Image (cartoon, rainbow, N blue to C red; front, side, top):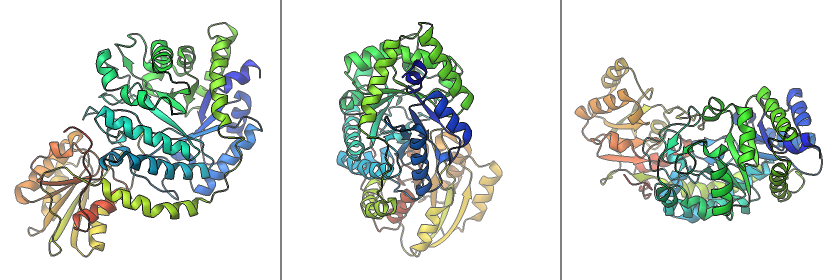
Length: 511
C-alpha cells in the first residue's frame, strides 16, 4: 500500500443514505477508507441493510474487509429498530442484578448484527453514571457502582464477541460524571488520579484484555492531561490505555465532528493529533467534505513528517489483525427473521425482570379502577439517542388488559395552558397514572405533576427513562420505571401496573 492507502485504512466514515450513491462509492475508492458506520439514516429494512453491507464490501474489493460498525447498545440507543430484536438498554439490564443477562442479550444482538453484515458494535458503555444530571450517558450505563459496572461490561463484551461481532468499550476514560454533552461542547473533569482509578477507569481495566476496541471520549481530564481531551492526548491513549492498562486492541475516536472537537480543534486537524496520540481509527461520521479533508491532512502530515509512518503502520497492524477475525467480508447467510423469532421469548422474559420500583411501596392498579393516563411524550435527550415511539402505549396496553382508561398526552415540558387543560380533562373518580419523562429538565412537567397530586393523592408514577424522576416528584408514593420509552419497556411496565407481574428489578444507582 502507498501512503494514501495506508492512511485511508485509519479512517471510518458515515454515508448519507440506504444505498451506495456515486459520491460515496467514489469516496471509498479515492480515500481507501477502512470502515463505515451506520446510523438510522442508513437503515430501512433488515434485507436492505444486508444488501448495503454486501455492496460496501464489494466496492472495497477482496482481501481486507471493511469494518462495518453501528451503535446498537439497546434501549434508547439503537440505530436499527424494525425487524431486529430490541434488547433493553444497559441500566435496565443492570437492574436485573445478573451480569450473565448482559452476556445473553449481547449474544442475541450480536448474532443479528452479524446476519446483517455488521462486524463491529460500538457497545457496551463502560461509563459509571455517578452524575444524576449527566445529559448523554444516564441509562446508557449499567449503573453507579464501578465494580458492578465492570462485571456487566465484561459479560457484554464476551457476548458480542462470541457472536462474531467485535465489542467496543466506551467512552474512555469515562463519561459518567459529566454534566456537559460532548456532542455540544467540551466537558472537563477535575477528579484526582485516585478517584479516576477507583471509579471511571475500573470497568475499562476489567474489560481491556478482552475487548477488540476502545472508543475515546472527547473530555478533558485535567489530572491526566491538562492540555488536551482524551481523544487527542498521548498521556491518556499511549501511556494510560496502552502502557499502564495494557490494551492491545484498536483504539477508535468518537465522532470527530462532535462540537467538543470540531469547534475547538477542527475535525481534520484534530484527526492528525489523534493518530499522533496513539489512536488507530478516526471516525468522521457525517460530512463528505470533512472526510476528504481529513484524508488529505493525514496524508500531508505523513509526507511532511508531522505524523510518522511508523505510527501509521503500528495502527494499521492493529486494524488488520482485527479485520482478520472477520474473514473476507463474505455475506452472512443467517436469516434475520429466524433469529428474531428464536430470540423473542428470551428477551421478553428478561424484560420483565428489568422493571423496578422507585419507592418503598408498590401496589398495582385494581381491575375495577377507572384510570387516566397522563403521558409526557419522550424526546431525544441527546444526539446519541434515536427518537422512539411518542404514542401513549401505556394507555393502549392498559385498555387492552381490560381497564377503563382515558388519557391525555402532552409535551415533556407542556405550556401552562396545557397544564390547565390536562387538569380539566380528568374524571374526578379516576386514578391518575403519570408517565414522566425527565421532569428534572422540564419545569412545567413538575408543575403539572404537583397540581395533579393536589387532587389525586394516590397518583401512580411511571418513569419513561430516568430513575432519578422519583427524586424530582417525591409526592408520588407509587413509582416504577423501565429505564426507557421503548415499546418493549412500556409493555412490561403495563404488566406491572395491571398486577400481572411484580417489579422485581433493583435500580442500579445510588439514589
